[in-house]
Image (spheres, one colour):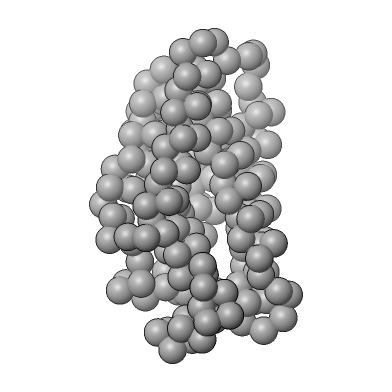
Length: 187
C-alpha cells in the first residue's frame, strides 16, 4: 500500500475539483481510523480475557497502519477539528463492551466494521481507477479489505445471537458511526 500519496493543499484542491466530496471523505476516514485505534485501546483497557486482548492487539496494528496512511495523506490543518471527541468516543466504544465480556466486544467490532465496509465501499465507487484518485482508490480498497477481515474475525469468534440489550448497543454504535462520519466530513 502506498502511504506516500501527497495530498498537500494544492493536490487536494485539484483532486477536489474533480471530486468535490473528497476532502470531507478523507477527513472522515482519518477521524474514523483515529477512533478505531482508540476502540482497540479501550478494549485492552477494559478486558482481562486473553483471547479478546490478542484479538484487540492484532487488529489495532492494522488500524494504526491505516491511521498512519491517513496522516500521510492529510496534513494536520485538513483533519477533523473534533479529533479529541472521536478518540474519546472510540475508547468508550471499546472499553464499555470490554467490561461486558467477549460477546459484547465481538458484536461491537462486527457492527463498527460492517459500517466501515459500507463507508469505504461508497467512496471507492466514486473514484476512478487512474491518476491520483486511482491511487487513493487503491488505498481505500486495501483498508476496506482489512476492515472486512476484522468484521469476519469478530463474527467467527461469536458463539451466540445478540440479546436485546446487545442489539440496542450495536444499533447505537452503528447510528453513532453514521453521525460521526457526517460531522467529520464537515468539521
